[in-house]
Length: 290
Ligand code: FAD
Image (cartoon, rainbow, N blue to C red; front, side):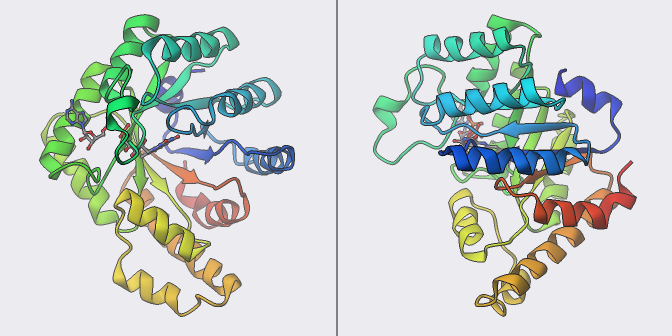
């Protein structure tokens, strides 16, 4: 089923992101996680894609397994960099043949000094969205990325929103945000979109901090600010992984409760293929989900 149709029927959507593991053990562990999280009746789950095609077969095989072996609605991430349009068509034809109807259309991160050889077909996510709409009409529901603090390459938020609007005009149905840790960025971005008359559903992406070093690295790469007050809370427990995880989960609960009270369309959890943190957060916020 198409995600946009499910979002129309759902007041508050819950969804989960997974990445395609490299090993059979990793895959078994992922399917155990999926079994646990399936109990929360998510609106959809999504499987990431290695920019440049590095996980092309693995992403496809996990998407196919989830589609065939569970009753979950699944979305395949797809990045356009490094692929010719004919390769993109092969990937999308295959998904259509399997019966997959949901794609998160992305550009991918351009590796430094590879700009020349990596842009072979669609150059931006908006071009990928147009390409999908042109070739597949309404077969796919198309999601796109949103950056509440602006994409790191954007000179300012106005420019960021200008290009986000291009993705919507090209046919994107909904957006999912990059992780953020200060809800005021999200609220400000939503206000700016409203002013511009851009009103597709936008789902905040939630990253529970269970490993501070790792998340600090991710946050730096994608330009997400970790507020100083949260850094101080987490730093106290840097040498105590259990306590650190508790603080990270408590923070995510506070963040999700505030978002839900402010009427967000849904919550998309970056699970890192684990269920524990997401299950605990869900348990603490489920009274606010309808
Ligand atoms: P775009 O929307 O194309 O934007 C990229 C930059 O170009 C922005 O700064 C934008 O303002 C600018 N821009 C857009 N159009 C134009 C134009 N016409 N002219 C000039 N500038 C323009 N990465 C992966 O590799 N695999 C994944 O599975 C993955 N999943 C993600 C899921 C989510 C929810 C999010 C938020 C990100 C994900 N990413 C993933 C990261 C993403 O690929 C990177 O952030 C990438 O740098 C930008 O991708 P995009 O689709 O946002 O690009």
